[in-house]
Length: 109
Length: 116
Image 1 (cartoon, rainbow over the protein chains, first blue to last red):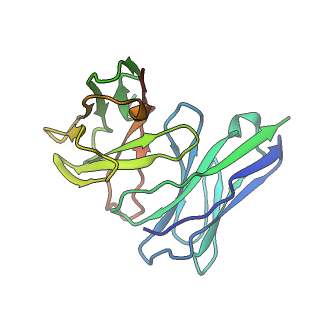
Image 2 (image 1 turned 60 degrees about the vertical axis):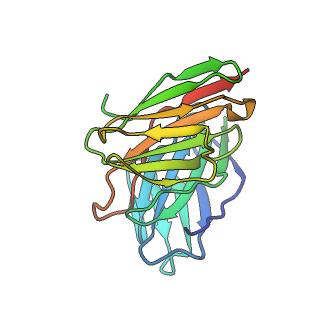
């Protein structure tokens, strides 16, 4: 399973855009990139998944460069409720997902 | 609610007692996972099932832990002779892999275990 590296923490103000970059240098051809959000005392919640280029949904955007060795989760105009831990994972269509320590995002007024 | 359901949400037990957690996955999902999470750490994989078959177990799953999924639907995770180090949140998740995209795993809200 490809190992991922992401910042331990990020701080932001309400209304700003937050970009979290994840490195996955050993990503395999069949691997997808998936991001989860987790609030305290709750299970992780799926945010977005992509294979290459850009994916956007109602919550976030995911940017993946051509070499796929990194990816950036973009959260537009964050609010206080976006304070959470964000996990970047890579895996194929069949494998289990291995979580790292994630990135603690703190949004302040 | 058609998400992953876990029961109980919280359990306090004395050291040495046995505890059992139940998980009901999303109905059409044939794969079911158990993870464990301690404070400040990401979820750690424990085991997973494809239908009723247990396909992989982590080294974290000592012989005091046993998981079953008898009919390929709900699953139970039993911890025998609990120790204080077992205190954690136990997460269940399910997925329907091989649908042409990445394996998207959907988690329940977790079952908190406190061993006193």
